[in-house]
Length: 266
Image 1 (cartoon, helix red, strand yellow):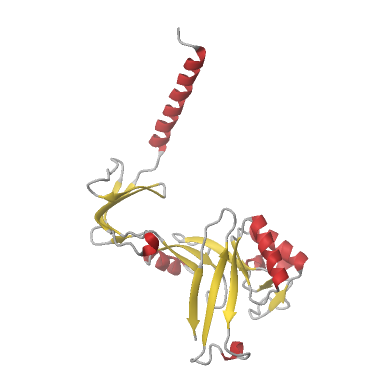
Image 2 (cartoon, one colour):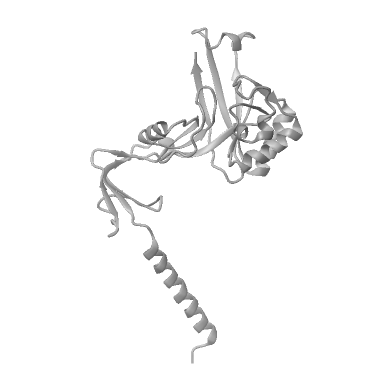
């Protein structure tokens, strides 16, 4: 006679198998990209083992299988997309940019950019967070100060801190208590990345980073190399000037890791 413990184990296994098949039955149909060249981006992009005539199977937004057509089985329910003559690679990340219209969101996707760290400002306009389709957006805002481009302008008590909310050149510094409240409201507005300006003191920087980590936010640091005390007045008017910058990431415990380094010629 079979022991009760064995019977119970078999019942649990049966239920688990039934659940798996039920989940498969409810799974969305797959998409199969067939015939394109799969770009090998391993070894930090230095590998050259691209796969011609490749198959990539995608289901529910995740890659289910990829490789040579001879080795990858195409699911029966898959929608087949002929990708012959194209190149397939992971989505690109723009670590410091904006998206201010549906047209720009479309352009990012057309260029292969599937995720951005997006902020608002005079060079980028206002972030269009409801664009669809769109790259995945990690919204970024400045902490320790605020201006009319802050996401907090939608909150009356923050908007009132500016003497003229319509003056986009005005910026106000926040004390530690105000910065703490700023953090809480930015999180409520689903901000995921904060920018530490180059004017912050060491103590303020430590405070902001500690609060960011506590709240699971990613931090960007803004460091500038200048050539003269009058640099800020002369750039970008003087075409011979060159402003170098590096945005160095302090990741949250669970967030992605970015490092964006570049230069902005005048």
